[in-house]
Length: 78
Length: 342
Image 1: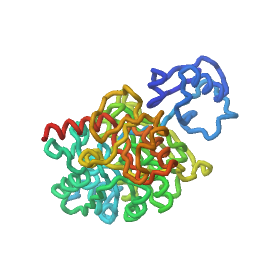
Image 2: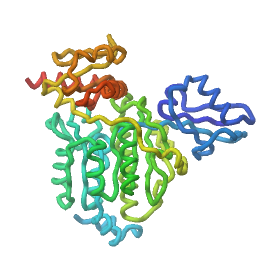
Image 3: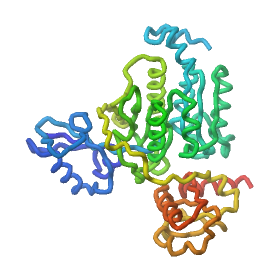
Image 4: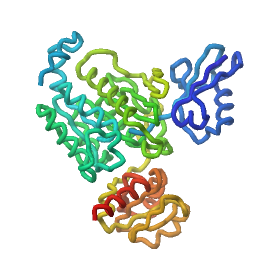
């Protein structure tokens, strides 16, 4: 089980604060690709955190059960 | 002022209080976040406070910008915030700067301060702050809002990461409070977290949110901290051309040519003699209607298309381009306010 959290406009696009992915392990890149397609996130810019650390390079990262990821866009209001 | 109740905190003490007194903090933006940050910094005993904002008070600000009241609508936020602080905290030296932060004035104003608080409402302003704070070696406290969520971080602190290490790309699509909606309590809480970081930084105590971004969700009361590191490859300066802003009031009171670059049928419709409907999609074809030397002010719904339109005109040889600070809704609001007054 992998938990995904959405923030800001990404939560609006996904119409959810988060969800749980039942796969025991999945490459980060393919999970983000799936979510981008599912919620049409192409036009949004966001950072990705794995276990509360923002990743610099997602290519080689393999997610495993218990990992939590977050999709973080910049906010702009004030 | 009697600071005895905070001086007895062992982390602060008399020496910490002196550091607050000797510090100079600039708050960029005197809107929702700025109104929360300013009184707490003044009350804590910060010696010098700068307030930078070219905007004027509007009726729709009052539910979250608690330094202002009904009878101040139309007045400059920086001046009115200064008056509030002068009355309530006379020991604080307050400097009101009646301009929006722009590339042409950023260095001159920022360099007079030890710490900057970001209380702006645009991502492009944060990139600008980041570039100049980086150049001048000044730390800054970031705060921003999306509906019930807020982000807080401290950048450029003791050679720590900066805004572009967290959010590398200028995202002009992100929307402001006026489009997304906001409660006064949300900006109040996030502004207070920013003021708290500022007091810790200048007082020299506690753990500063450097290399970390805090996200607070007021709907669930969940708080999460995410860590990030430097990414030198992202630190090129913003390539986007910056055009000077003009306030809605100044535009309305003048006879300048105003381009509404929204597409046909977008609401609200704004009818005024010097406001010309020139949708972005057909702008390039219509430029010959205008004189390249005349001053042209541009607006759209959120500001994104105005920037694009300004870049098109700039490429076509126009030299006097200004972006209106605010979108169609705010302009209509101001027009009806002026109509009520007349």
